[in-house]
Image (cartoon, rainbow, N blue to C red; front, side, top):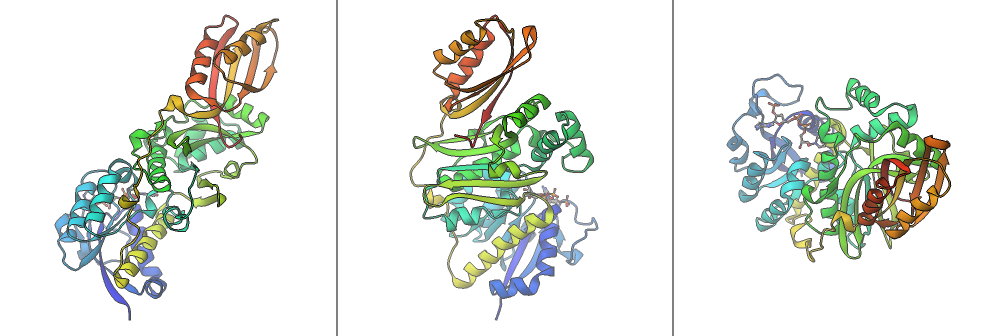
Length: 430
Ligand SMILES: NC(=O)c1ccc[n+]([C@@H]2O[C@H](COP(=O)([O-])OP(=O)(O)OC[C@H]3O[C@@H](n4cnc5c(N)ncnc54)[C@H](OP(=O)(O)O)[C@@H]3O)[C@@H](O)[C@H]2O)c1
């Protein structure tokens, strides 16, 4: 016999309403798989009288959070309101009342993760957040359960659909950044204010959560070095293509000499790399470890229905643990050794540089000298055009970020270098 589990919802927007529909449409399967019958008690919203396309009785909606949180029978709180406050306060209240929490809130986790994990653990309840990173793609479960025996070394992700859509249009259709963004907006792939996506804030929040989970280290969004895609030019994308690369906005979390390097920035990746084939608004996360080798998780990183599958999956697991009287994975007690977050200048990568130079004898030697002085080794060089209008395209071997930035400054000071048009990291090649 199925056990009844009463669930309170905080928020019923895009994801909340999709989760309620999923709970109704797949009710029999969910009940069979979890051994639980999920009954939704109350649903917190801002406007309780708005008509909504959700399969629940209108009396369930409330604007009073205590209607959800004070219910003695409520065992699980599903937080899908977004933003930091009041979500943070309400989630903490839920823990203190002994309720399990399922959330999709990346902003909250990327800024207050540690506090929430510790408070959940102190109260012996679950905090599940599969939906918070890359919507419908299972990542948190595989990283915390299936890969618990591995020591991962690197996580590379395309975790923002808007920027991946824009870069795909630039790559596949030769559009400029502005044209591609305008199309994304027209087709509904970009928010009205797209800066959170375009400038990499959304990806940085997801990078912090992935790094926290993959490396047992509490990482906050502010730890993540961040550069968006607004400075990626059609020229960069075209040169990348000619050299066998594709430009992507990457979230990178990797171990470097025991330290944790976390960053979000545009990067060139080799055309044969599995992430290069992730197009349009799709997301993917590529994970590496010495034993498991390379893994890639691919799918819909956003949208109501995909994200709702992750929410309901978490709910099923909470239901099963309630039924068996056990708790799920407790992240706070996994934070064993405190790894240091590496400063950006200390990180390593390969680099692409595009220089506008005067073409005359001896110039290449001067330029190579600037690299040599900073101990940055050049892997390959191409020249385009002649005379006053020559472009030099260079790819370096793996080098230190600080040394590369110094090289770029030294190059700008050289008389035959008219402009350092672009500097971009190259990932996944060496
Ligand atoms: N949309 C996606 O594709 C996606 C994917 C992954 C993760 N997420 C995350 O999922 C969460 C929800 O996203 P969403 O797209 O579903 O958001 P949404 O459509 O804006 O829905 C937010 C819901 O929360 C309610 N709400 C917000 N602030 C409130 C407050 N102060 N008091 C009471 N109710 C409040 C709103 O009430 P009203 O309905 O009355 O306005 C609405 O029902 C966010 O954390 C988001 O980052 C979303």
